Length: 349
Ligand code: SF4
Ligand code: SF4
Image (cartoon, rainbow, N blue to C red):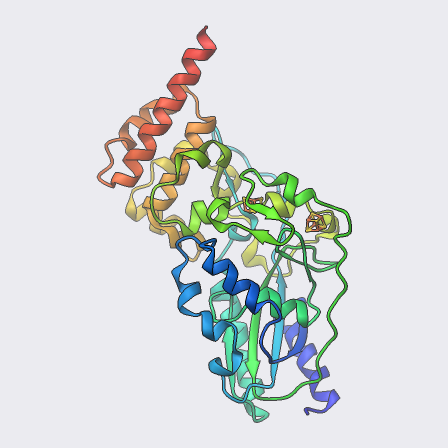
């Protein structure tokens, strides 16, 4: 077991590196491994095939790092206020708050590297992960007391609410484990009521295939028509179950300036986004998590939002998009045109 002063040193270093939370769990099978397997078996992960590929490793950390003794769970607040931005003319879409600034993977990975070196110097071997690793991270984070898993399935911390990124370090060093936190959801069901697509089918049960975050980010193909209207003006992810959570009333600005909203987040109209060619897309979303879904996925989402809130002024840009060489964009643009035209006709009656 590592001495208490070394743990204190670790906590101080994580804070210095910009993390807002550092908790430790014994490295053991996550308590909800069986539920995770049942969730996969029910097909609720949709197209997220990597979850199935990693199933055995996710539920047995010894397969990831033989001899691992502890999991260091780290949290980093990304919340930023909406801010005042001049808006371009036209209708605007919403981007999930975590994607307003630079890609958190890049920022957090650098910090994990520094921690890895520090732990190695003390005799440890490590595996470090931000969100994409074979770790059931919310489950492990709850065991470590980094928060409790709310009915929205998100981890909630009494001071940070739900607005924080998680990262994990599996290490062969044995640190004293922290205690889990009590569940403070109580009788609240606001997140379930707030979900626009009914994706939270019961407390702590998420059908990813219905979730707007999945539909607009993980889903690479056409967005099923049954969900398009409910997606509303959301063009990358969804924050509704987070915004609804009363524990987010204590949210405060992130210490990391790279997470602040870029100008386009509040400033650009949907029509501005629709005008992006491949080069302009890459340039605009350089170092942003949005680059992940490429122009085809992003403009697909923009077309859906325009179909929901666009006006006749958006029709020329959509007509152009309906002839885009990328069939995914063309199909969604055509859907949007038909929706707007139907609205215009209904308003004229
Ligand atoms: S992110 Fe949006 S769609 Fe997904 S569960 Fe939360 S409220 Fe529902
Ligand atoms: S909105 Fe209410 S039920 Fe949902 S996670 Fe927050 S406290 Fe829990």
